[in-house]
Amino acid sequence: MNICGREVIVQGQLCRVAHLDADDYKFLDDPESAIIQLRKSGIRIDIFTFMQKLPETTPKYKYPMEWDNMAVLPVTTFENWWTKQIGFKARNKAKQAGKKGVSIREVSFDEALTRGIWEIYNECPVRQERRFPHFGKSLEAVHAMSATYLDSSVFIGAYDGEKLIGFIKLTIDDTRAQAGIMHIVSMLQHREKAPTNALVAQAVRSCVDRGINYLVYSKFAYGKKLKSSLSEFKERNAFAHVDIPRYYVPLTRWGSLALAMGLHHRLADRLPESVVEKLRELRSNWYQRKFQLKPDAL
Image (tube, rainbow, N blue to C red; front, side, top):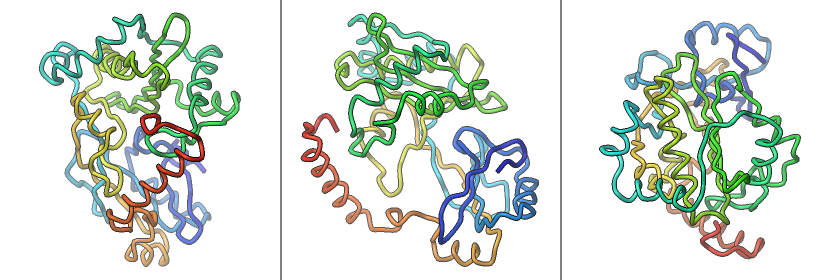
């Protein structure tokens, strides 16, 4: 369904929760109008959730709220980021791609880029110790998912010769105040060339060129897992943990009860971290055996 010019996704069966499509990248200017439209839609929605946008981090609405988070890089100039915000190790990694013949540039979205993204997605079934959701998708499916928000997105490619070995999709919010890294993936076989580090550096340049004040790299912490190799990568590149209000608006009586019972969260988010960590370890071992992967490939 569509409200206030935004596509809304409804998920769940026991508790039906609605949110904006890409609600980490696109935001509501008038949440109250959206909520009124949802109530009148005739579709069963128990809870509607939305995030507040940067730079406002103090709660401004009276709806039920929980703290979410983002990995945020304040952007002024590239020189400031390069010399003051990141350290020696991050700079060396960003230089490494160029020294090994990798070129980084903004690229148009076309069939060649789609095919390159498809090849990257289908390199390995597991990434970041999780089953990679885009592995095995058809070329047509990859084109469809990559073609969203083209009017407000920037693609950056990392090339070894003419071969795409990594890419970023930056999606810019309607006020052009922040750009979110919607996708960032590089080929594992070219890891030693550090294309991901160079892609982040170009993303900073792209934001500076467009006068964008904040570069957002998804969440800093996921659930109760506060530290990971990914969060350490973000930290080395000067992204900081910023708490952002996320609102949960009950639209039905069951929604109010479900919210009070915590049913708007996944089961994994309600388990103790010690249990979740053990499950992660079992999952990692299972993937190593099933796909015959080396530990560093996860």
